[in-house]
Image (tube, rainbow, N blue to C red; front, top):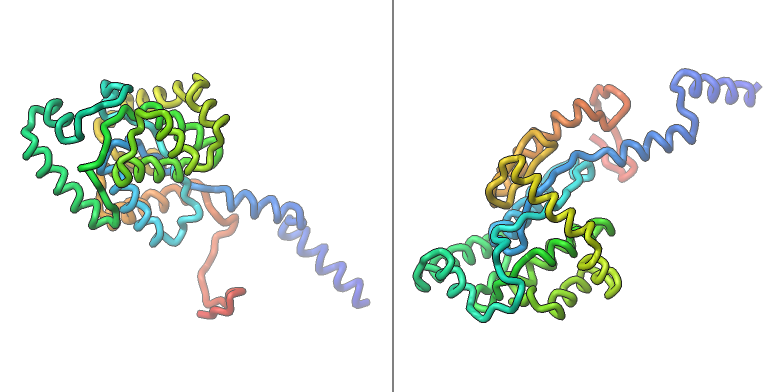
Length: 271
């Protein structure tokens, strides 16, 4: 009789809830895979893009549903006309010439940016920075994304340019940064010679133009909301929460409509 009751109970559970062990596992995997996409157009030569990355990271660390967010880095070039050969001018000299500023003006502007970066926990060394064309770095980033290393790639290239003073027009230094990301010599060569990564960079830049993006960083959340510039973490968090609530209505994380009550968790926490 005891075994009959157990069998009837299991049968009732399966019939009424429709979930076998396999279907429940599939459902759990689908729930885990559901993520709202946040796309960010960025250039590794953009000082506010690195600051924006840090501010975004602070915001997402406070977002309770962060596991359901997918960050996608998109390529952008602020100045594609920068030569791809070694540039002997300092950053101040190059920009002063390009913008029609004095060297003193240039230094004053960069000092302000350096302080903003410091407030975000970053160290900028413009005295040692080397002006370079960012296109090849973007090609490597696009390859790194296929390996799940997009965020690591952005971080390493930002640090190389703004903190470490690496010359990314120099092939050896470019390769050294790519290896810090975790790429092999063969993978670096593929990133720089396979035309599809070049095309992906160009496609991102073209898409930015079609979306009316004129400056970076530019964060697009669920293709409904955008944050332009290195906004404060609070601004990021507020927009992420708003976008996620709308996304969740169309993409329910749980298959159930839940009426919240007091519960205990496996970690031993009880309301």
